Amino acid sequence: DLAARLDRPIVLVGLMGAGKSTVGRKLADMLGVEFVDVDHEIEAAANLTVGEIFERFGEPHFRDGERRVFARLIGESQGRGMVIAAGGGAFSDAGTRALIVERAIAVWLDSDDATLAERATRRDTRPLLRDGDPEAKLAELRAKRRADYGVAPIWVKSGRGAHHRVAIDIARSLE
Ligand code: S3P
Image (tube, rainbow, N blue to C red):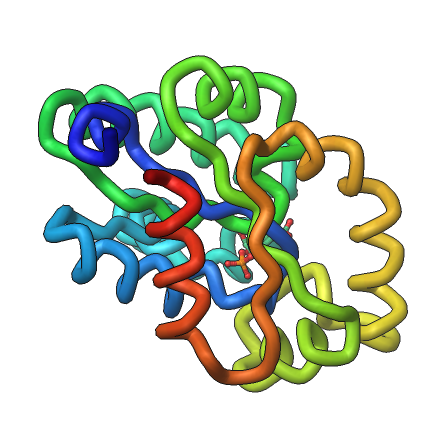
């Protein structure tokens, strides 16, 4: 049942702009558990923005920090339930993916490329979308990451708006 499955944190994965943070917060409220956004945790730990970390230290360094944050959060979540919004690339890091697959429930939040691009570029916070056409970049990342996201046992489509609806869909598929 749902309460028993909540022993494991629920981790929302999927491309930038899928709505992982917005939907995740709503889902956590619905389930009465804590919500954590991994990008924010990394920024707080480094006292730098995600963009600054990419710029100064490079993506591999960011992925190392991301993996450490996941290990900590999954440990902390034991026995109390948690909804975690992952960054879009977390599930394509082999180590992070293994942690999530073994100790959490991954939910792939998906949307079409145009909707993702529209949402992901509302704020200029995403280093991977800074050069070139965001929609093309997202399509490229989708192709690269599709097989990884496909490992998630739950798949939910998020359209425009309707974040509340999507959170309900996820809660249902956890039952
Ligand atoms: C990334 C997604 C971002 C952030 C970083 C890298 C990616 O998170 O972790 O910019 O590799 O797709 P969001 O998916 O929350 O935008």
